[in-house]
Length: 189
Length: 189
Image 1 (spheres, rainbow over the protein chains, first blue to last red):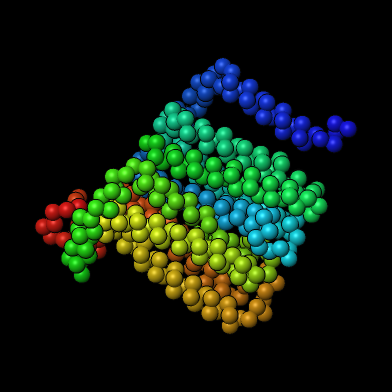
Image 2 (image 1 turned 180 degrees about the horizontal axis):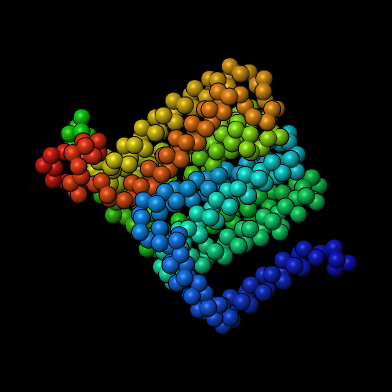
């Protein structure tokens, strides 16, 4: 019987592990262990360009925003369908499948430009708590999309309308947190 | 012309609300955050539509449906962006009015608007004859490509406004000073 709930059990386990990690000394030790990686990233080509050429950094930042916009567009497109706001004559499976490619492309652009920007200001963000909040939110967002949302909708989308709305609200909240914490980094200089 | 714009900006700067908005840490940051995050609605949905026309996104969805149904949410996003953009201008009117990047951004916005009008006209003329095809006809694809280019330019210029390389206070070259709208002997920056 437990096998029917393996995804739920996995999610609860992940939350328990995450909470345990956050409350233990392991979190501090991991953070300290990552200092070398952040120091090294400032010496890479990306770090050098980001620190030396303000214009290059600004242009990459602008493309980060374009990636963010596309990510937002695809999320609104598919979440709007889950909420029953538009494209109700199209099946949820079709909308989800159609939106998956631009979503992944936007996420790839965001991560690439994000890594570039992070290299330029690595030690600054290393000491910013909000940067870590954003990374946590991004990890939860990716885990939510690829580990929960897609498998869940593939199986239950047409039979559980209430579930669709829950997924859409959770998705909007997760990705709003990702973007808002990103903006917060800008105010924490 | 530059003199009149400068005088208008100085007058705006002398108003109580401009000072209040500029000096309110939370209000200014809320307005700026809303301006940036609304990109996900406005530019995000616009990119989804443009990429559909180019055949890179939602190839299985009828193109006219995508454009029609996402049109009003996108317009809502742009409206919020323009209102918050105007408030950001109002908060720092003199520097903004003499920002080279803001001026280029305005030119690109006008280009994007004209392109959008022509794009809509061409879509109506095409009469959805290509609706289910993977890619739109060449003229519409060109319109979509121009739209993406103009808006990427708008985002880049918007990001560059924060940098003071060509500010009038830094006494740029005569050409830049003219284009940026610097006024000889101006006392406010």
